[in-house]
Amino acid sequence: MTACFQPERNCEDYKTGTFEFETYLNGEIITSRFIRNDSVEIDKFQGKADTSSVRWINDCEFILKNLNPENMAERKPIHMKILTTSKNGYTFEYGVVGETRRERGSVKKVK
Image (tube, rainbow, N blue to C red; front, side, top):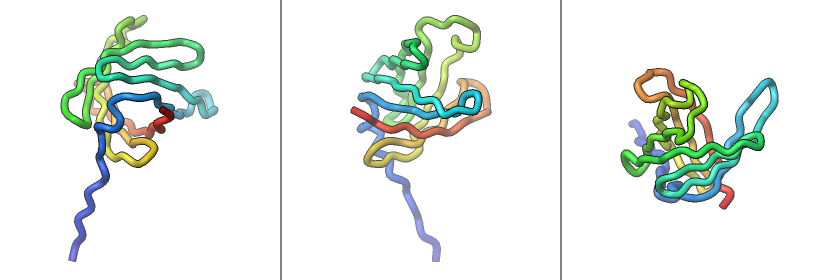
């Protein structure tokens, strides 16, 4: 007998709000904070703010595009896919649109 497990995906809960994301940078855990409404995301990281447009593909997937890119890498849109949700956050997969490499991360909702 096999069991079917469907992860929780209440993506609608995470279309707007204030979030925190932790990542490793130069051997340290760094926290960034971002604010998202339905069509714009403002990321605050190490004293710098970046603004990106948000285009929802479906309830759990969206494309982020930096509105003020400073180099070629920042001009490339990022595909974000929410994989699972919980009471306080979500797990996601992301990658540059058109490329096969994907990374995963998790976000905590703070507001």
